[in-house]
Amino acid sequence: MWRRSLTILLTLAAAWRCPAQEPPRRPNLIFLLADDLRWDALGCMGDPVVQTPNIDRLAQRGVLFRNAFVTTSICAVSRATFFTGQYCRRHGINDFVTPLTAAQWTQTYPALLRAAGYRTGFVGKFGVGDAKAVAAAAKDFDYYKGLPGQAGPFFDPKDATHTHATARFGDQALEFIRSANPSHPFCLSVSFSAPHARDGQPREYPPDARDEGLYANATIPAPKLATDAAFRKLPDFAQKSEGRRRWERRFVTPEMFQRIVKDYYRLISGMDREVGRIVEALGERADNTVIVFMSDNGYILGERGMADKWLPYEESIRVPLIVLDPRATATRGRKVDAMALNIDVAPTLLDEAGLSVPVGMQGRSLVPLVRSGNAPTGWRTEFFYEHLALPDRIPPTEAVRTEKWKYFRWMSGKPPIEELYDLRADPREEHNLAGDPTHAATLKELRDKWSKWREQVK
Image 1 (cartoon, rainbow, N blue to C red):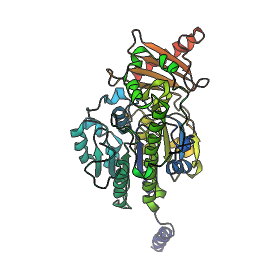
Image 2 (image 1 turned 180 degrees about the horizontal axis):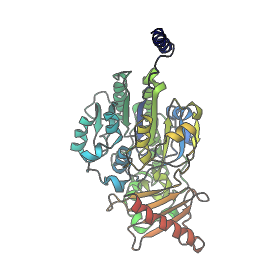
Image 3 (image 1 turned 180 degrees about the vertical axis):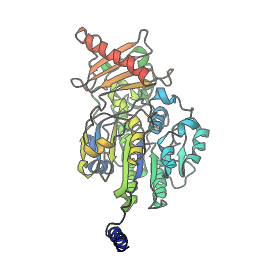
Image 4 (image 1 turned 60 degrees about the vertical axis):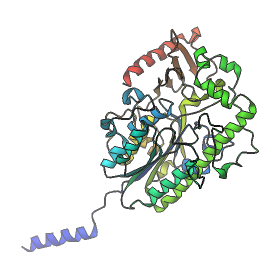
């Protein structure tokens, strides 16, 4: 009997000395999405003019991905890809009115996180589906300020305060954060509509009044490929497409270029200010909040006599990406060259929350790269690009981009017109090697990759 009593006493003493460890707290998650922000239009990505101190600090405290891309460079498709972690060919959103189905929504990162107990919020440009579908999405979040289309004008004529939309989205993000229970994890998606143009308006990139004076005395360097000679290399149907029509509104003269790009930069700086406010509002919760910053598209600022995005050139498909996990102290300030894609965001957010990634998601979690700074064995060295939306205005294209090569096809050509670039020797994609006999073997190899990829991504 005394032995049994002694055993009980020893067990109780051990429990008193070594209390049960609490499970690690699940991190809060914030996904910040810019609209039409090209990869190099940030201070941390090397732009010497634009002022983005808050986003730069995210890069200094987190991991900066120097080779991040989108798999389709147009708003609705890319945003559906962020939600689903899928290529366009799989999720099927290829216009501005079709919503994700109810079954598809259950497999998006917001739905999966909410089902796992996260409080979810959405602010800004929803981007997928028509106005009715966007309004109906309110039931899928605990806090919802989503807007259809391009999220309306930057200045609401009914708003007497004349608050810029970017600042309003920042206010709403702060409202969500401040109302959050500190003991309850949350996922907040802030979808800015800047620096997207308000197409066709007298001033297409109107900034916050606080930013009007920025860059007034700066001279923005013109892109090297903003030449008529580069434009004439495009197929005839591309020369007559929407990208050229928008170029005619923005970049015909050097004065127009300076005015447009300065406003574009002012919108970026306004967004940067809201990023800073969001981070500051976290307070002590910043130590347990993962922040992902990315853009839904790249942007063409006059290169090849074109404007906007859509085309498979680097300016259009390459985007900035920063992942700040405050727990990954060993990689703080690290720059990673491994390829990252917009299909990776959903798997990354789920992985950070400790959830399994659905087999239907085609992206991969970036968490191993964020924690080690190195790509794991078998990490991607190429990806498939597709743009088939609005074929009456935008020439359809498909491409394969490897670490060294880019191959793409203008699908409207009869037969399709091919382009091939050695990105290491020719990073601006000035010299099309598709017709060079010395690169015939490479052309065939990339053409075969394209054929396999377009089937695989389904």
